[in-house]
Length: 319
Ligand code: F6P
Image (cartoon, rainbow, N blue to C red; front, side):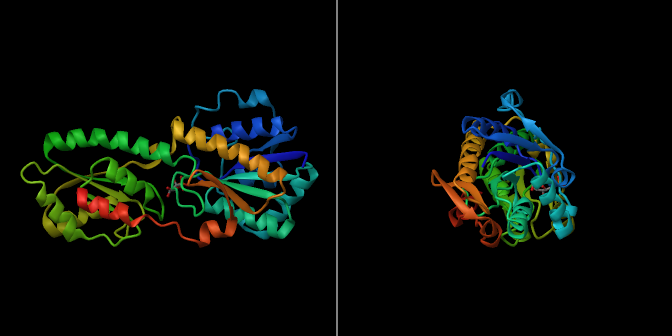
């Protein structure tokens, strides 16, 4: 292994830049050449590669987004796109790749290894925290803290007016963000994709608030009703409750990473470089119970990472 490359792919996540920094520094420390692939798998297909040096790693620890840019490449989902990408990597003499992203990124990485034997390790970079094999993903801690500080503000105005507020957070098909944010904000109800939303219980929780009806309801975007707007509409139709709703959206994906995300991104960056040197491939380098883990990429999406039952219980007891 002489020359390795790193890409970021899928939805960006705070801490990706800290991760790139760690990969650059760890590679140089190990005497490897390190290249950046610009624009995720799209850049791989186009051969959009740049050589990185220590200078490129300056000021990355605290910045949001990804200096390597990202994409959700449709072309890479086809065998033809992957063959073109493998060709570009071979032409550039790249011996191994680190792919930072979520399950879409890992599907692509696995296929590249299977079809073309390009050594590739994945690192968990997504705000959703929905990858099996790692306790946390890079970006998750920042995203939940961003959501919490936004919702604390909404709570103030909700309290002043005695209003019911429904706030939708990201998370695609997983309720990790909603659950942690909901508990952190003292939500009266948390709707997550993993559990059927019960409108009657939700209404009872609003009534329980008494005369000042200040109620904070957190909804994960993948819940079975279809999000905050639909729930607000249902509350109006079924119980004549006027509820305001807010969709936090992409604000959760930006900003300077928290200390926790910086540390995780740095640790996994160093370990990903070492994994390639040790000849590992087709695995995600993660961290569980303070230990570095190497999970076969396929298992990161075929095994389901579940929300702990005690969290669900906790949210009910505290509501
Ligand atoms: O996977 C990260 C994520 O932010 C999800 O929570 C969300 O559903 C999705 O990406 C949004 O993707 P896009 O920015 O492409 O609309």
